[in-house]
Length: 216
Image (cartoon, rainbow, N blue to C red; front, side, top):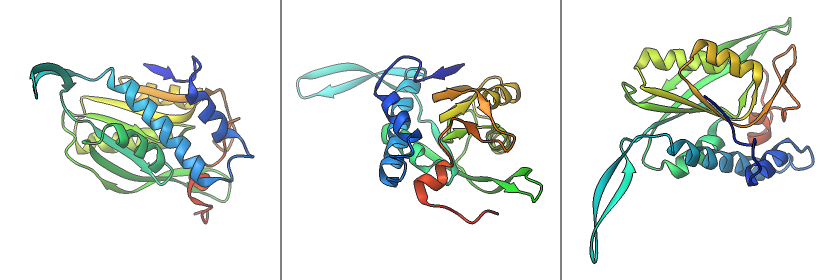
């Protein structure tokens, strides 16, 4: 399942437009906050797909039967760019366990790159729902490698992927590798450059959120 959260207009479309806008991008706090808000919307929409149970709740005047989340998901993100989007998910799934993965593009002099995965901190994943966030789903290589590594740590019952901007090429690659994933996108673009950047995209989400880095 692929869900484009901008397919029908909502305020999320305004936040995506600000993420893309070079006149707004120099405000790092606003950039991070817009990613966070997209994470919050995605969390709300994903929650509609999660298992729930009926629970009797004692009120001051009686008993109310309420629907509540059956099990807490695991929120996973790819450092460092994924942190604001992850925080948005965590604002809603505030009792969730969390996993953090360091996966990045290691560039070569000829312009090619490989995905390097250096660090993982994760709770038990066996038979749990995992919500994996990464603001830019470009080639899909880092997401697929991350999912494959998480599957070595355990066997999640379901994986939801959340991205602010996704490219159709990356979506197709992820679904070929992980056909049971659900992908939730703030917006979907169709073009990918030879160097693996989304067009029109928004640039480097990590740099825009946290400042430029030395290229490794």
